[in-house]
Image (cartoon, rainbow, N blue to C red):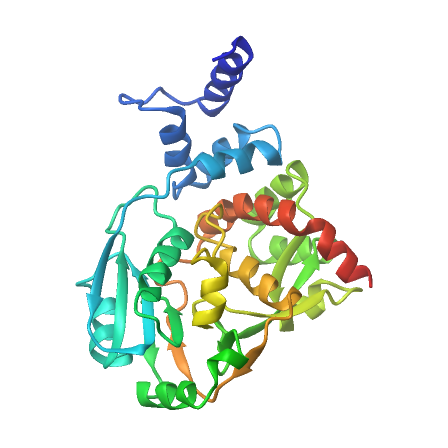
Length: 331
């Protein structure tokens, strides 16, 4: 390790520890930062971001962050349509409902992370489950969160998928809900957008505005109905966002090598990233007349800490997409 590296690590630790007591057990800078990143205390999250000088340093940390451990559990069923479900608790209410009601009769692959997994990575677990599903040569791979509920019977889903030639389509969307197959837009962060967050939650909005400026965050995604208001005067790039329920063809997954989601993201924005890839690349898609419900926020919750934590994902999102999106939005 060079002297410069030692100086940087020491400086980063001191910055994170400002006005804080040294923990009794200190494993590594990665562990320490991750504990702050996962905190439900907005003040600790702010200290986390104070440990980085710029967007590039955060992205480097995200790439180095471990992916966490998980276990594959399978439920036997029809394999032409194989379902992949990340879950924290295989015996929990949500996972049980998936295998006994919602997707009963289909082959289900649960990717179980367990509770209290400090390095849980949603994208990584999804990719592991998708790769496992590919071993059975399914026509369709369904990716679903565990916190869903029945609106229409699984036979409706099977019927529609069996009537579609998978070689003609790479992705299938369902009837839109608030949290999947939803029309969204990529918008430029502006004064209207910032004012919206200040009005809804002044303290958290102020923190996000400061972090946006520090890390040069210029773009974000928003549901289309809101984006039309807060992205004025530009409407932003329109696309269908997959969110918590998605159907992919075997051919598409094979082309990705099972690496469907970018695993640098930490439990957020990986779905936006994939949605944009599907849209910008012009992947052939179909929409089927099937409806499934979702319990929004039941897994990670929706609170100030989650939105502040998401700034890290926006750093990476802006790094990946800024130049391409500027061309699209200005066209």
